[in-house]
Amino acid sequence: MTRPLTSAERALGELRELILGGALLPGTRLGEVELAERLGVSRTPVREALSRLAAEGLVELVPNRGARVATWTVAELEGVFDLRVSLEPQLTAFAVPNATDVDLAELEELAHRMVEVGSPGPGQDLDALVPLNRAFHDRLVTLAGHPTLAAALAAAIHPPIVRRNFHTYDAESLRRSLAHHLEIVAALRAGDSGWARAVMTAHICNARAVMVRAATAVTTQDPSDEEAS
Amino acid sequence: MTRPLTSAERALGELRELILGGALLPGTRLGEVELAERLGVSRTPVREALSRLAAEGLVELVPNRGARVATWTVAELEGVFDLRVSLEPQLTAFAVPNATDVDLAELEELAHRMVEVGSPGPGQDLDALVPLNRAFHDRLVTLAGHPTLAAALAAAIHPPIVRRNFHTYDAESLRRSLAHHLEIVAALRAGDSGWARAVMTAHICNARAVMVRAATAVTTQDPSDEEAS
DNA sequence: CCCTCGAAGATTGTGTGCAAACCTAGGGGC
DNA sequence: GCCCCTAGGTTTGCACACAATCTTCGAGGG
Image 1: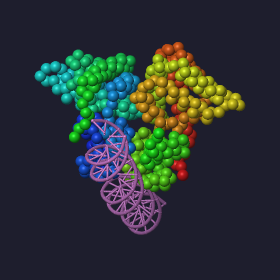
Image 2: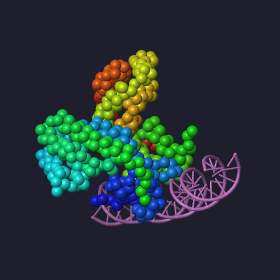
Image 3: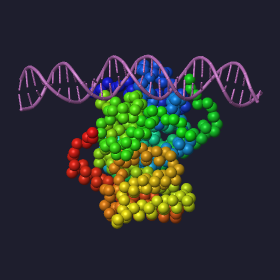
Image 4: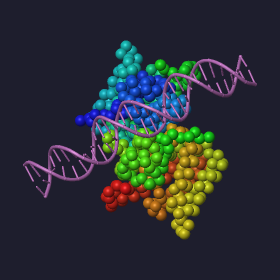
């Protein structure tokens, strides 16, 4: 029973998808008329959408000079991981008492499928990991039943999510990451919130090491212009 | 050398001040034309300001039904304190290695003045505590040098900040709170991040106990209409 | 007496026009 | 040759007007 969305909401959703989906790279200029034509609406709802995306941190908005897709430095990326280390283990701990058998089975299913498509060999599909990983973490966050913490986490994670593919993982780190998911399920099953918290902390630190390494490599090797047509 | 602000920015700032200052109580309806006249601009910049305030969590925005000053339930208030417990002790720990003698002296000065104006007696002035307390915590957050964590904290704290007065503190809790500030300075001076983190955690838990008690008292005793002229 | 339906008023959503600010290219001065 | 300044085009900021939606209030039927 979904009420028909307003134009501004559609523009907001579409733009968010374009940015998060990688169709619009960081630094890309976002002209109002161009977006308006692309989305089939006037400039007004586009402006509203850009305002909101700016508040979300997905675009940078400079008065009289327009909008660009947000960029971030390596320091900011590390900052986001500090934040995740502060929040996600806590959320995981909150999830422990709430996990039903059904939840555990589905989380385990997700973790197993990630191992299947993530293990080296002919069936490896790193792109298929992204939605599975997202589903796993979302499920965990939902299970925590803590909207405020979840919102704070989502707000901070959104911007750099563009980079969230698994091609930057080396074999060792990837194996660790996949094992963490299974271990988190085990900790949930055991009802051990301390264990769950610890594994999640390790999981994020592992990801941080991978991402920071990849980011520094990119920014030091490839100082190319950040423009897209 | 401040570039002249746009109308939307002025509207944003003024509205934020009105809400945070308590001139507009939670639940107050925010008509676009009314605000436009009050601020001397047209509806367009007002709409943009409302959009941003909604993203900040200060106003609630329902399509086709307008904006109201954000309200929050006791559960949400507790959620905010969970978030503070996750972030502020960490920020305090980050501040430890960065604190210079000057910083320590100024923090101690603030803490002492809070004890002076906060102690029972003829000189007690609970309203004077608010800016001092804010200065103390801001100083600490700045010292941590971690914009991402600070932004996450600020975003979550903003909404319920309206309630941040010290009249709801009982004598015992107030004394604890003031002592915590001094103890945090001591921990910083000792360079003991674990100590600093622990005291900050206690500080926030103490505040949570006070606020939650006050909020439940209000909502259970006084189910009055949430309207303001 | 209560519920449902409908119309008038009020409020928000969106398109459009104009003024101001910004970016770029070209010419003149040092 | 380099820098500054100016003129043109482009883009954003804001106001206003109209369309769509919601709210309110009253009349009619059960």
